[in-house]
Length: 153
Length: 434
Image 1 (tube, one colour):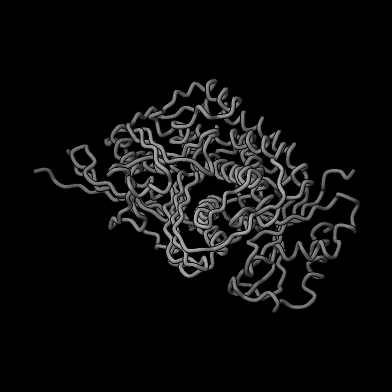
Image 2: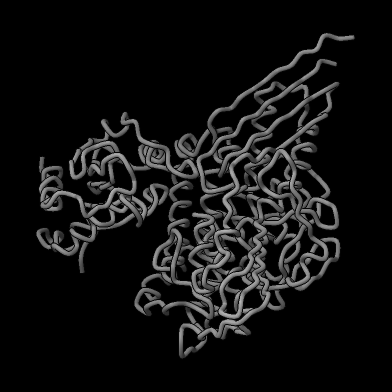
């Protein structure tokens, strides 16, 4: 039986439009058997349709990599934000006022080690409707490299 | 003649109310002379969007009305269309729809209690402040919310805007393995919900007694969720088809949401109305918690809505465990529909209260007209009435900040879902000195 995960990789966003990039990333990681490179049960891949559901997903003591679409950055660009950088980033408010901007301060209070949370933002250009098939090839290989870099740097 | 003094207060962001609304108050001689709960969010025209659509598209279209309570919209819609197509859902479909609805009550109530309402009763500005002193309780709230989401996803494929519901039943039955995985968590959730009820029962609430009419569905043999007759605390007892004979909607200039009245009077729908009318039908364990809480029903204190939501979370978990542990036998996840022309009605209990739908279809089942009466518009007149009484009882000589906070607390207590948009509440007070 597998133990508790030590790493959570969580794709955030709507299942639709460019905002589904977080979901797509998790699907690709699953298809590439990303978790198989680690001891069984060590890495958990999850999708999260709303930042408001994040606090329930986070487990004590895990390293957390959030993957989300990043508006205003070139398509396919991967930007890594530490917890400190994330807390100061000009994030958009989500619907119902329960977006990442509102939920991060709550995570800081509830989560014992928020400094272990990292965001990997993937640029989607200026709009939420940009076709994802225009994303540069090799994006998900670079994403895997970024995840490994975030875990072991 | 005294010199006129007007005070304007703007609260630009806010907070824990879903949708775009504003509150305007004018206080003269220590009395509220003018009070408007303005809903200025643009109309969203879903009823018009539905016209001409195929009948089988309706559940997925109406799920888009709300990200918090999409199941409610789906359930009222399929009930109305099944009414037209002469489909009687079999026992398995009825039971599993109730389980899915339980999921929505759990997640919606848990979200409202912890993220939206509770901070008011602890003197906090947000759940972040609340979590500093009550981290364990907030974490519990998120666990309960996650359970609700998982129940919705079990049937709907996903928790936000689920897609599993269809006219006649579900597109597919959930996997037995997933049910087996979920059941122990649901059973643990029952105990956590009981702790939540006990905790909420101990929170000091304003003692604000008011007269109001409660309206909810009532089922024959269970606490009504997905079916029942429309009943009221004044003795009304109607089939959902006869809703229009006593309930009316009207447009008021200061709101883009329609106002609803029962025989010309405001009324309350939602958890407290349901509990007031149907508490005798709670499962034994939930009723024991209710009795231990000391809450006397029917309650005339709107602030008891918080405890009502906690009790309904417990009820929903108990029901989900019961129905998933021993589901009725079934052969198919749905009955095929034979579309035809007609008029049908749906009425179910959304987390925020009664949700009524009416559809007219053409011979091919396409939608000729649609009418949807959501709970927030039904509560709108009651909210204004409550605000007036609550604020006068609170004391209009209080500081504007205190009046504003009490007003916001009263509004939030209803869990209004003005729309699926950002939150924004402005309060304008004009006060003339005595």
